[in-house]
Image (tube, rainbow, N blue to C red; front, side):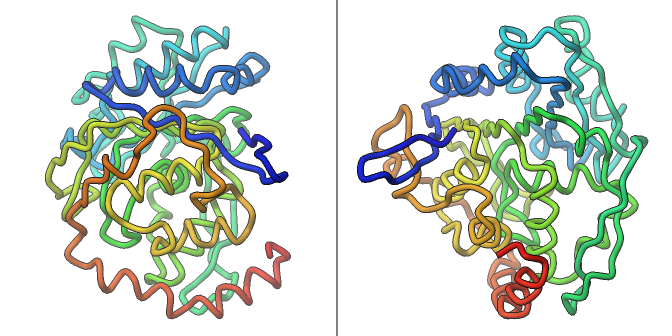
Amino acid sequence: MLIARRGGRVASRVALVESRGHGDGVGKALFLLGDELRALRGARQVVVKPNFVSAWRELSATPVDAVRAVLDVVARHYRGTVIVAEAPALGTFSEALRNFGYLSLAEEYDVEFLDLSRDDYEVVEIWDSRFRRRVKVRVSRTVLESDYLISIVRPKTHDTVVVTLTIKNVVMGAVQPGWRRLVHQGYAAINLNIACLARLVMPKLAVIDGYVGMEGNGPVGGEPVELGVALAGSDALAVDSMATRLMGFQPEDVGYLYYLELMGCGHMRLDEIEILGLEDWRSRVRSFKPHRTYEAQLRWREGVEKALEALRELGYL
């Protein structure tokens, strides 16, 4: 939610709370959002997008208790069937549901599981490595058409774009698995591609279960790191930017966050974000060990001028 501040400045609210468990922190963060969640009452279709990179490694996935906490809150405002949707990069959706304890959700809530790899799709054009708009990918129609998309993830380091959080979760999950490799057009283009796709599938509610994240060689092969917080907000860019800071990185160094802020898709600057909950967020910073290719990943900046030219041609700036 955007709120007015003194001096006419507009800010986004991000709930940040201490977490003693995967469901504990998420529930407390969502509680702090209060009236912002009332938009759920008028939603036509709610889609919850957890993160299953690998169907076999639990640390790479969104913990089921975090999703339970989200569904508890959704049920108070929304009376329809909630779609829980994902398509792992490694393994199958059904394997992930079984391995990570998600099947029990169908007994506890009015949910429907959707394998995004089998969903209907729309064709969307993205950028090739030379920033020519010639690459076509298939994007989930369900995700594109959802009027209330919730992204729920654990914070992880990444092998290409520094960090993977709520925005990247929905973008790469919405692209059908056989087409995701086309998004990866080098460090420069992948960040622009994620940002441009995010314009189409930006979450209405961004939730980060930071009780335990992943550092090092994420998003699959990293090691656990206890951050001990949870975040939530209706401005996904603000939520992801704060999580990036808590992980010990700067959001300006994450290419897709940088481009999204330039395009006006949310707030990233600290003076434009109001923190609800923990007042001294800096005391909760835990410097995650970056991926071993971190320095190379920062080379996305070499393509900034071409990327900005491309965005201007499209009228995004």
